[in-house]
Length: 604
Image (cartoon, rainbow, N blue to C red; front, side):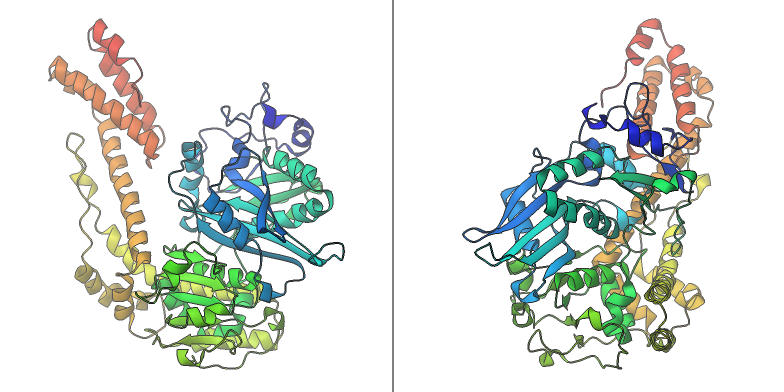
């Protein structure tokens, strides 16, 4: 394969003694994976991968955006050259890859943005990529309708240019929300690119196309331009709030960078200017309220929006969010119109124009310069929206929102004490992350408990009837369960929990969460039904039925087998093998002519 040429040296140095088998689907413990190449030069686990398939598992493409005096921002290079972007997508990338002129970002700046994917395009790698999503936590699954853009922007004085400045951005376009990982990757690739230009980009892309695929739960060793990165992508089986440490091995003398996380931002640094209001911000994000973050730079804007989205983890934030949003954005008119209520969206902005355009929004967070984050933050009341006149208004939260829960003074005192004692930012971040996690879990456990009760009993699952239906979610029935089994069991916080739940049940985050849980439970029902079929003695059943009914049974079982493989049902090990054996034995009981027909593989 072309994509694997010249990779033998790296693989010899990095190869682990353990090979990764196809059947290894329950990935909980951390395992090391590097590229394992078989005798034919192909990776053992994915023999059908074509050139650029591995690259496409990580990135859609890499863009270089420059500034032209006559044209303005323009995409100068797209790599690989065969990558497809619509004109609308290119325009979005152009405008979102440069800071607003008022940001004054001299030197190197990193930030990220998110934009809508053009409709109508389907990936030929859909099924191949789905297998990684299956084991990923909900907040790390591929973004189906949007792309992320990870930017490394350089602006330096250059008297030889008419404009007086060299301005260029290197942008990674991906479906993956691995913000920490891609920013670390850009720190390696972008400075080299600015020095050596396109050959360096080609080398980086060829390196990425030799990487193992982004498999959750595996420890991945990723060579890039003479450096080696080591990461582990979390799985949905990990205990929330824990991170499996990347184990050191004898080959670690080759590893330059070990990333403890691929996606987490520093919550404390982001929320430091407004940390007296973190609990209120958690409620606003949980309820999908319209929020705008006004910040001095795209870096602070994007980090704060990502921190807001992640503060309700392990719940997935299901509305739209834009870490960096500009007046040129395709959705600008849609999101700033005054003819209807502001949509459920979180926007990060830096242009002073937004202070006027979005002053009708109900909740505005004004972030000051984070470089002063070491200073002690004074207690600030939530300000009235009418006081927000310009982007230069003082940092704080501008909102008329009245929180449902009483303020948790303990977390504020703990963080304040940390500031006074100069506690490391990483420790403050860990305290804040744990606080948000425990708060979200206290909120979501009663919902999980009630939804689990909607599942039919296993004794009601008959192999010869369709799987029973899930009982419907009834709001009042759920609210009754809160009296004895509500959040008071795990959270000391007092307040109007009932009101918070009622509001939550009407917002997109509940809808997204419940759809996901319902889908999982339906799969579990199908799996239990299939396992019940496998426990039956089919030969006895065949003897009691006509030939036509037996053929019908074979066709139905084949459909079940196809469905189980396609939907990756959560079956006990060996169930599919057992089902295939049942199908084969039933076919053998039929006349030869029917056997020949039924043994032919069914077309999908």
